[in-house]
Length: 313
Image (cartoon, rainbow, N blue to C red):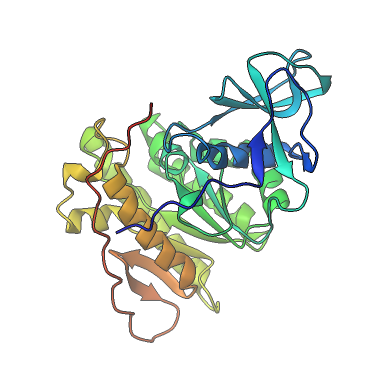
């Protein structure tokens, strides 16, 4: 079973309303990238999946400057030099003695990333997922700044399903994905891709999903040629879920997003893929393609999916 959630973080907090400053020993995040990463961490101070959500950049003289939360729900980066204060807004504040660390694991992509409670499961990790994001969005919406800020050793990436759902062809979606991966590789970041899902609500897209994943599988293999470790590892979620029978319990009630059961498997599989740097492709927690000819490791025990629903008040 998944490990219990840790205590809420103490190095990040929301300041009081009607203020534009942080308490002694705390300062505002220094960049938009840090502000984006603060969203899910702040959710640990609330009620699990009732996450403080990133809502973008603005310039507002009446709101706190820099990173702030509006009504405890939406997170903004305010570019106004001085800003202000109001009863609905709270500055985000980070401890001067402990804060964001480089060399971490960075989770980025669409809502499957955003809703994944990664900060509870992966040490020194930051989540900057945004609901609705395409691979094009990941590439063009501050990717370089995120990579400079966090200098991640590993990036866990989910994108492509929304591109295909929006009508972008398989080949063009793959090209976008390739550009994202190449931008990460240029900064020395290894990439773990969590593949498409055989979602009950998107059966009309499944053939495209499989073709898209096939191009990524070939790309990962080509990148690994002559390397000591795999620059890109693919977790074949589609095949892994099908091997489980693709039960509806893996998905939320919308038949599109993952349930806590689905995320339990993702957490186990991603943990293995992050740890084993020579593996190119994973299925059901087993390395099925590796740079080295050594035998595949024994499969890690599959998690016992929790049937408890998270209720947010």
